Image 1 (spheres, rainbow, N blue to C red):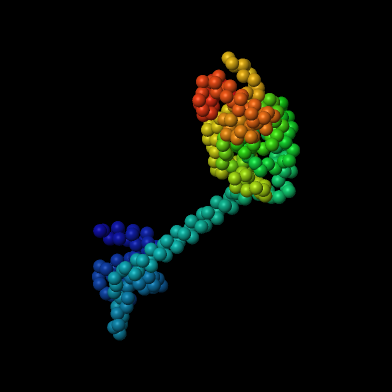
Image 2: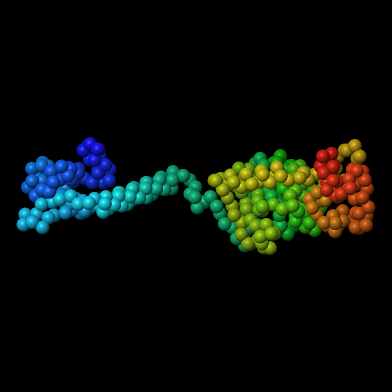
Length: 328
């Protein structure tokens, strides 16, 4: 190794220039007194800083002579000390840089990280939702719907108004939403007739409403809690983008929910379409009969007729045939 290489390495560890020159002189010439060091390293005797630094980090030690000479000692401890000192300086530099950036962000960014997620609790939740849904939607609302619901009124006149104004709605309903008494008839069907695009899953991963690309409302599903005690209002950030991805994945996985009627080769009645939709959503026999307003005996008779019409020997085959042939 060249002497210049050693000097560069020692300076990289944080050793001062005079200390490096003094240490190189001692390595080259062997033990020296202070006067000899001053002769070998011009300027080192002015303040003794180089020798003092070497003594402090433990790279040299004085002999026990009447006029002490200074001699290099095994450098392991000294190098460890220099490395730790350098590491501490780098950490301080990192902290200082982060603090400087944080000051920049607070000064130039209108919204701090603390403003990206708002927590709303208790009785304030319905009013906050109403305010956001009244002021924010411009293009599209995406929702994963599951009980418990924040409102006791079933009819969603606000969504119906938005749909009339041209705002798009895509909603994935959980099976538990379809089982809620009168929710299908008084909430879901009117919204779908107004233009809502609806699908269904056996369960949704979270209660979620995304309004345009501006705000997301997140709360627990009925599987997590029986009460609505808290709501997260999330503004655009990494978490917001993750929630968007969660919705789109759920939407692609869900089955279409179409109960608006329409034409088909077999001209299914609207009630038959609703029966198949509820069946595909996983609703139980009692819930389906109740929603259709018929007895279980009538339900079983009509189910048997539809299976015969589809040539199906099981409910699974019937649901598959209905999806493939656009009965839903």
